[in-house]
Amino acid sequence: MRKFLLFVFLVYFSSVVNAHIKRDKQHFQKRFTILGLGDSITEGGKDFQSYLFSLWEMLYTAGYDFDFIGPHASKCRIGALNNSGYSGKNAEYLDAHIDSIYRLYPADIVLLHTGHNHMGSEKPIAGIIAAQESIIRKIKAINPGVKIFVAKVIPSGKLPKYSYIPALNKSIAKMVIRQHSNNVFLVNQAKGFDWQKYTIADSVHPNPLGAKRMAEVWFKALIKKLSPAKLVYKPELIHYKRVDKDVLNLHVFKPKGMRIGKKHPCIIYYFGGGWTTGSPLQFYRECSYYASKGMVSITADYRISSVNNATPFESIEDAKDAIRYLRKNAEKLNLDPCKIVAAGSSAGGHLAAATATLHEAVERQTKISCKPNLLLLYYPVVDNSPGGFGPKEIKERYMEVSPLHNIDSMVPPTLFVLGTKDPLVPVSTAEAFKKKMDDNGVTCELKLYEGAGHPIFLYAKPLTNDFYKIRIDTDNFLKKQGYLKK
Image 1 (cartoon, rainbow, N blue to C red):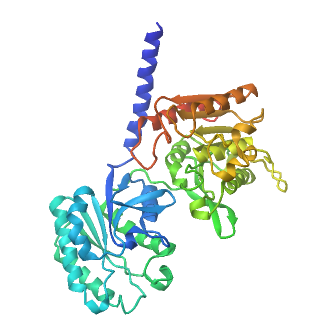
Image 2 (cartoon, rainbow, N blue to C red):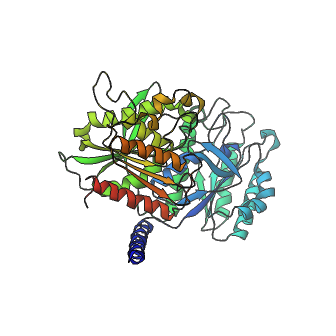
Image 3 (cartoon, rainbow, N blue to C red):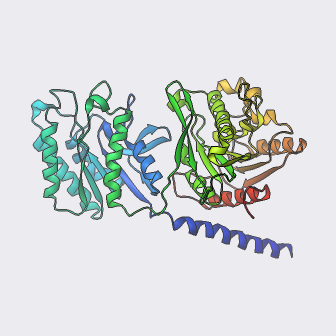
């Protein structure tokens, strides 16, 4: 009888997972690949960032399912984005190598921005145009269905070296017209690009504003040729904190059919990334989903080392302040201040747990509690002791910031999800966390995912069944606690 019931349960569980997968597939397009092709302006560098990250944010928010590919990696706040940018190289170099590059990385879409790295005295325009035409021809020979976006290159204040660029851009426009192709498109990156405003001190490479502007131009060109996305994320960005020049936002997804005056349960997510990298966009899927279920759903930005030169202590401070902001503005946000769920993965799981376990839960001046009413911890870093996980500065002060070492009877009910093959958070740590919660009379559901690692799934990659299993386990926990309708 037991075996039969187990069989029935597994069949039912599988059907539920498949239903969630089918639902999401209805909202997402076929996954496609993008190859950024060019020089250092594409690749990025030590003192400047490529346009790739801003473009990634725009496409992801617009609901597209895609990957950047290529032999190089541009560092950014989500880690790195692959590309085929070759610092210091020109169009002729790309032409000489494009056959081998594109055969290894046969992207559906190519973004070609090349024309720098010549001297004006060389009179290079004819050679650049010939190289670009050859690049296009070679790519199309390998993949006739490819979409190639050819940019008028951004202007530069480095003169007389780049005095040829205005004339080059006119020739690029004529070259694209000569293609007579329905899959080669001109993108005017030069229009409105003020090098005095949009480049770093070298007058060549884009500063953050310039990189964002380039991304906007690419994005507008791309969406004209892509199928419309069925699920577009449209969060409201709300400033919840300012520290010096750093402005931190809450990305707020409002419940469907929200009525003014009605209090909704609220869930706030903290992204993972070792307090070093990451983006609030990590939890856009979850926020969209739970907003559709009637919850005010939020993914929070907080200070990280790669962007703000911050330590985990500042990250913790921001996580607490985000919840204080929610409680202070509960009426304006139509949320129930007594039904706030803190959630997060990895280091974000640490922050969620920190808001609930660490001391100073009530801020001295405002008297507003940062303690959530429920916790959802996905492969969280909860042990920051010398034998646990974290940088040196956090291990030296682990009694202040380690959730495992600060559990008491006031910690809210918790769902703890962990893979059995997690190299950063041992199962024994999760079991010790649960035991302490049990000893203090606090509900703690521990869900172990056999064979899963860290992270359990990658939000910017094709989703696995584990993503949907986590959603189901989360739904069930929220229903038990009265935050979702059964």
